Amino acid sequence: MTPFNKPYLTGREAPNIAEALAARKLSGDGPFTKRCQAMLEGLLGSGRTFLTTSCTDALEAAALLCEIEPGDEVIVPSYTFVSTANAFALRGAIIRFADSYANHPNMDPASVAALIGPQTKAIVPVHYAGVACDMDALAELAEHNSAQIVEDAAQGIASSYKGRPLGTLGDYGAFSFHETKNIIAGEGGALHVNRADRVRQAEIVREKGTDRSAFFRGEVDKYGWVSLGSSYLPSEMIAAFLLAQLEDIDAIQARRLAAWYRYAAILEPLAQEGAIELPTIPAYATNNAHMFFLLCPDLETRTALLEHLKADGIYAAFHYQALRSSPFFADQAGPDTPHADRFSHTLVRLPLFAELGEDEAERIAHSVVHFFKR
Ligand SMILES: *Cc1c(COP(=O)(O)O)cnc(C)c1O
Image 1 (cartoon, rainbow, N blue to C red):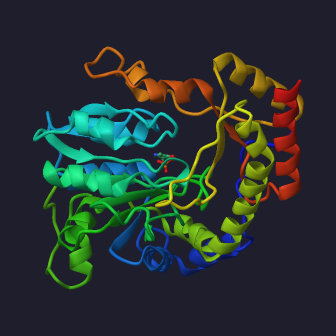
Image 2 (image 1 turned 90 degrees about the vertical axis):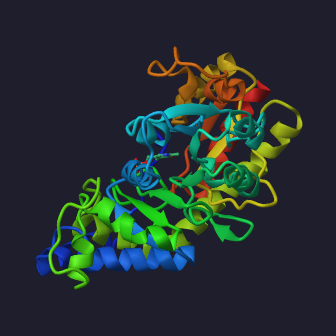
């Protein structure tokens, strides 16, 4: 069977972890953490980056940094992972679900415009499949309404909007290094802070609400509880693993992109004929080959396609249930999100991982073609 995902190992992970163990510095913010943060800051070009235990935690830290209070409204896409909304719901926010574009899961600024107002404290765009949202349009809406922007860039490493890296376009950006992402640490994430005036507070939030970081820099002579916060630091073993991956990012990306473009070349004629839809990448966005997805005409076709692929030894996958229709939220107020619902029912993700290889991508794509030509 070809799995849907296979975590990629560079070979440097275990030696790095052994080095961390030998150094007997195991908790957070040691040398491996600092090296990862410096590499990420190099990739992102501006702002400060802090490793976190997950993207979920980076989003929760961002919600604290936005000073969300009960009753504040936060706009998130309906078609996303639970954490995008849950991080703000934990702070008592009223979640407002924006719909996707008709032809792409990304949040449509027109839908955001219909929900935003003085009660809106934050907008949380998700760069689905690593393809940028229309950040200029969202930034204009945010500015008009004094709302902050938290980018859920969980899937967005090594991708950009008008030449600027994803995660650096809002006030805060959240990345994931979960084993299903391009660059992995098992579980892990990063919080990127673009506002110089919030770096100090980010350190406090990440260090259990204490000014411990300032203490270790010698800026205060004792440290204590100064704010709300939590424990978001990954251990040095996680950072040691992650460093190996970050050092190989170009090779990992090259392999993923090669498989992605092989899929696209073989499936494009099927899209031309109208049998499936393929996503288009807007001129302002880049493709980081986080995901290859296609849209089936309806749910029945999708179910049959997934079965057909399984019979051919291929594990493909659908994706999110639109959060607007989730059991936790369904009976709350707010407009429906029909485009998000359509993606819930018709979207298929094909296997994509660094070790997949172009030949296997070709076999999988031909299996899809065969299904539609029967
Ligand atoms: C993976 C993902 C998350 C969660 O990341 P974790 O690191 O597992 O917490 C959040 N949002 C989106 C859009 C994701 O794809």
